[in-house]
Image (cartoon, rainbow, N blue to C red; front, side):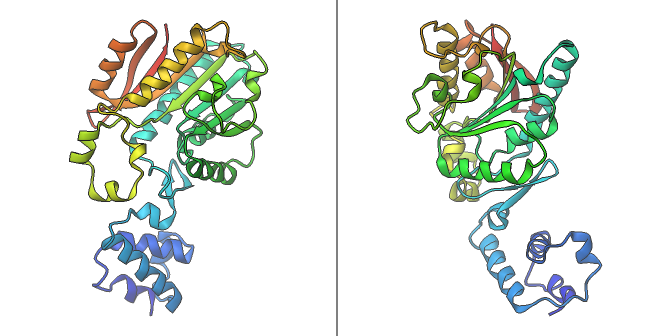
Length: 315
């Protein structure tokens, strides 16, 4: 069967999806499809397309999971059912971080790259941390990617090894519950991040896209294919969605207040830490009320009127 015959086959109503499958299985671009309409498609490729198309149309499996990757910020990231599919609002957070770093570089004329660290908490497929590093290749000396789930962490590590090839950052992938690895409580922690051994950190950027959707909101509004295929724990944690944010903020407060903890990281004190978080508009006010004594929350970007990218730091 020729490529043109397959593309114009009326059985395939989702033409964009069909083109994505063809590009993936033929290892070509959409432009190459358009210029090779007479190309013969093997029976093996046709069978792969039929199976993939059926999974998309009948099983409602997300296209990104079928393909095994997602195009994001000009890069191809591996994803699977252990990881959340990156959303457009994630780009807003990356842009917010890059804008902050540009401002920081301008403000601090004598900054040293060896004293800057990136923490990507609840990393999933690693898209946040990896994209921030790629957008700001000369700012960080070290990065930590942490996730509670080992299978998600493996995807993040795979993406890092694929996409980060020409840089020499010190990087660790840690299976840990939020910031437990800083409190020395994580039973799965393998090795201590080297920045804990050297009290020289000047600037820490923490990015975290934690679950924040309330249980009821998720059940009422999430698309059926999202409920069926994507990990619910990446969306929901607690009745109002904020339980995990509360835990992480409490951990930071504990680290900041404690003078007796072994290896208490000083980079969580004064103005050394800047967090970038994602949540709903009303949730920002909730956290402001609950943590007003300790943190400042600034809304820096808005997505679809209801989602906020928040910059947070210690008072």
